[in-house]
Every structure is written in C-alpha cells, then in structure tokens.
Length: 244
Image (cartoon, rainbow, N blue to C red; front, side, top):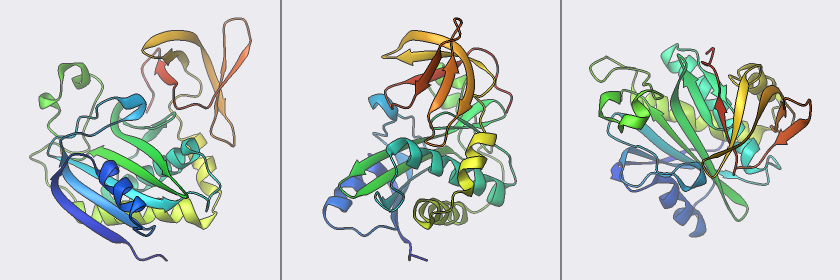
C-alpha cells in the first residue's frame, strides 16, 4: 500500500489548485491536501464551490494511467470511495447522483471534481461534514445537507480524511472492478425522469435507464431515442424527488 502523505491546512484557496501545482513540481502519487475551509473552491463547469468552515475539503493525487481511466471514471470511483467512507466511519447510507454528487436524505452532501495533470490526476472532494447549511447561499439551502449539525459530536475528522484518502487511492490503483457494480446500484438517477442541462439551459429530457461500464448515462427521450451522456459539460437535473 502506497504511503499517504497528508498536508493539512486551516484555510486555502483551493486544495485542487495547490495539489495540481505540487504535482507539476514532482509531488508523488498518494499525496493529499486537506483544508478545513476554502476561499476559492471550484466545482464542475467552472462553478464556485461553497466551502465554509465545518466541511471537509480534500484532494488526492493518483496516477492517471493506472486505471486507464477518463475523468468521468475517476470521478465515479471517488464517489464509491466517499460512499464507503461515510458508511464505514459515520454509519450513514448515501446514494450517488451521476456524475459527481453524493446524496444523503435526498440532498447533496458532497461534490467531486477530477482534473488531469500529465500522467497524474487530482481528485477533489468537498463534503458537508458538520456544516451550518443555514449560512449557505439561499439558492443552495434547499438542495444541500450536512452529515452532522455543527453542534453534534462527530467521528474524528482526521480518521475520516485518512480513511477517505486511502479508499480513493486504493480504488484508483488496485484494478478492483467491484466498485462499478456498487456505483450503478447506488445511483439516484436511474429510473427517474431527468432534464439534460448544458450551459445552464435545458437541452433535452427523458428517462434515465442505465449507466454503462464506462460510466456513461443512458437516457431515453419521449420519442424513444437513446441519448448517451459522458461529457463533463453536461449536468442532470432530476424532475422528481430523489429516492435516496
């Protein structure tokens, strides 16, 4: 097992940004950056990622060619690692919304962003661990949730982070394919009517019917035509309440 090198910060602009810079300077795979707060966190499609105190923000450096994976596959692997860690450390069950959101009690508790850097990749994970959701921007308060309330006693954050980093790195380097069936079975998308979003606009809708072995989402539109989604430029909005 690769030794994990964990760098901890109170506040940083972006764990992904720092670890990408470190990777370019020769930082070895297996390294991770953990921050208690981000001042400039970023999500998919260049969106800002709300990163206040109370959350866990961690980025992990993995070898890109070890899994032969695209960013979407690495994101999916990380989703399974997050789900497993939350279950192992916190005893809570979560689902996975294609492609990069972890869902707890029907709301988003975590987002994931994978970014390539030569023959390496940085996987950034932001989790609402004991976050005060009432202090989030108004537009996020209806869709976000935290694993714990700020005043609750929680499992050790360091234990959670080290377990998560080890799980992410192991999944991305072991060649174990069992994660894929877990990713599919944990989906909060399949079986739901969805809207396909690009650049903030609805470009299609239909029924999400399956996720294939490359982690692409298959949607059938109202005319019975199959749409296969695998790009990071596409977002999905569920048209009814998620089941998980």
